[in-house]
Length: 423
Image 1: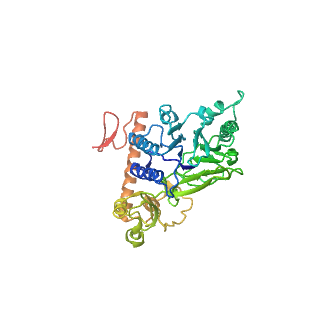
Image 2 (image 1 turned 90 degrees about the vertical axis):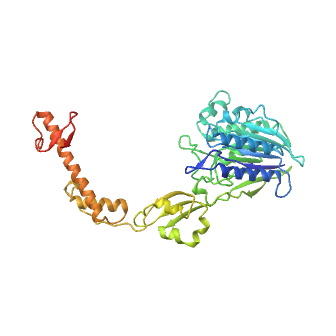
Image 3 (image 1 turned 90 degrees about the horizontal axis):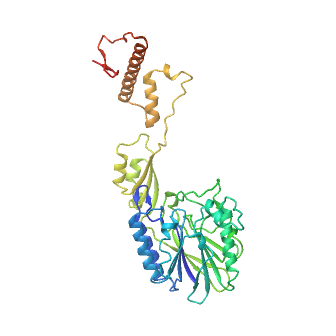
């Protein structure tokens, strides 16, 4: 039996405001090609999608159409088993599951955990594939309870109870290899910046030993391919997302996993790289360095995150960066040389000269010494604010005492609404 394990497509996701629809279409097209024409000629008996098909519960129309197109194409050559993740709406993703033909199996209902998809591989090996949709702890601790006793409020408890149900059903199927498809955070695995937290009470992880007795656990949720620790005899794998969804993933190799289950012995896992439609890069330097360094030419078509280290923030920074790097997504200004200003003692701010205050403020914000013009603008604003405050205080005194405010008969007038203005 050969399986292709994938997960975390996150259809409909954007990257810092940029649509990823075309990039997602490209990687799903590549997955379809792998199934239609396997790299070593061994046919793929089933494709497993371990949750987070969509990025949100109500996905864009174009994302729904892309998923439909992908399912239709894959199901022409193999069986597709899909479970829901924490980003999916289980009800919406599972709509029509009872109407789909045998080659499309949507497992999004907690009541289906111990109802496996039974397949025979091209070599005759029987396999039971159990889907565990993402388990909302507060719902699952009741739904999976035995004897009316509610489970503890933790992912460990509910995923453990789900696997117990799998093992109970599997005990009545001698000679059948087992696969569990689950969406969870297994202890020892490393997250990235693009996964949504599923923590309950500050705890989001389950032990890898929860899959004891299962031949292969096909996991989703984490976006990097990895192999967390597990019980002897089991193979537990994250395939990761097929597309990079954050700059924390820029150095990750994106893959799908080919899983071979023989009649006996452990599953063999082979990663197959998924070429990325656009690379990612994090760049740092002065604006002149970033625009002039020939070594950075290879990043001109990448999605880039840029940190500019000029002492003062350059004018028209984004426009100048995009003149070379057309796909800049993030820009930060972090000067390497910061102005160190001497300690002024304990003089109260209100007692300091406004020119000194303005100079310090401008240098703090711009990381460069203030010019005479900038200080002049600050002082003018300061003096205008002081004048306005004095007039407001005078008005308040007049309203309390009924006397004329200072300056009322020397060019200062009052509107009918009570505002102070200059005649």
